[in-house]
Image (cartoon, rainbow over all chains, first blue to last red; front, side, top):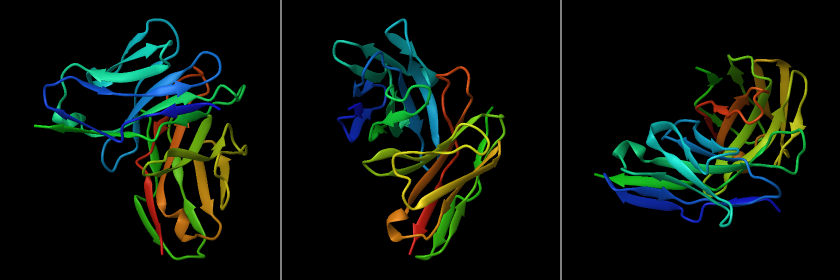
Length: 116
Length: 114
């Protein structure tokens, strides 16, 4: 079965330190991977995606993610955290079992807390 | 910028009521989705639509129905609200092409059923 796992419910990082939010996946075929962010009382916003090509993908707000095929991971990273990065982060993978249809399989989300 | 507007931010309804959640997008997107978000469960797909008058069941359609009479509007209907439908509901839209273009979300409707 296809799935996405975000092993950490919460990640705490001091402002200015690097941050990593982890995501692993299990899909058949080549994965299409996404990160979204949800700020308090808001809907989700797209951060970045991996479809093909360079394993390091750069996205919005200084975030990047590294696709690692051997470890089936797509961890979200940022070199220097800001307090304003505090939010809920979701990893998602396109459901490749549904040909012609576009659906995403979502992780449970990771709450990122950046402390001043 | 794409704008997805959900008509209500907060709703409180009684058990057994029929509830309508409305969603409008302004970018002529073909695809529209309804999710519910619960802590620790991520997003679960209720229904989606690939075009006007088309609808497909998602992972948890029981107790819900949808309507898409116009391209810009996708409505979620709770036929008889129950307390286990208390949740955050998120609407999203997406263009058909490019195929892996991102979803655009509304700000959500937090529904409480008492």
